[in-house]
Length: 326
Image (cartoon, rainbow, N blue to C red):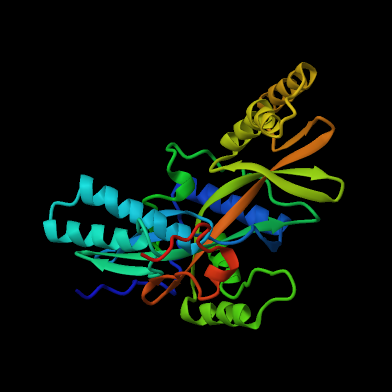
């Protein structure tokens, strides 16, 4: 069957009178764009899949580190849906056949990134991450950032991709600023990678903003490293406390050097300090930890969301344990 093109993929529906919560979020965005006027990359892109039904696209999942893993996630989704929700036997068989090719018991995965099965189209998607940067300071959570109510939010499950949703003036400015943005890459950058990035601007000129995620970074001198993260600022703080009382002891046990009672008591005290502080900056154990807001965006074209680029498989992952051909 023929699938519809995406309406308004290259338009922004600016609305003067947003509803109250949306207006507050747009004002927060404007304040942050003035204070943190530059973009830096938030790490490599995420990969997942989206589902088209009629003219509507929704995200199925967006938590994969590479296209290979995203195909495994799509295979899992197809198997669950075929078993629990699909009633048409022909469609069910097609879903299971696709899943077996994406996640075979033996042999190599079929590196196919789009499937048309019954009334639905499935496509692997690419999500870019970026951080707003001020005077050597990365953007913290905004006043209107709250933890989502469900645990699937981190994977953006069932998130509607709607380029024509009402947008405020500041969201429109942000999206326009991102149209020709190419995340900086470590030198040397392969020419093919840059060509693909420039090509994506032409083929997928629309940009939508997705819900953010929140990373906890540890500063040590002039260096920093990611410690943990979450889909909301409160959960990020809780996960940092968990890092001290659960993760560190387990790491030490795994290394064959169990923590002493004094170290366990010190880590427990650090976790209590984190939990008692609203954040986003924590000074514990002689180091500084910060919750950083990582924004997410997706490119859109006439035919829907952008999929993985040809170089993504090589740059961001490949089968770790490929199965031998049968």
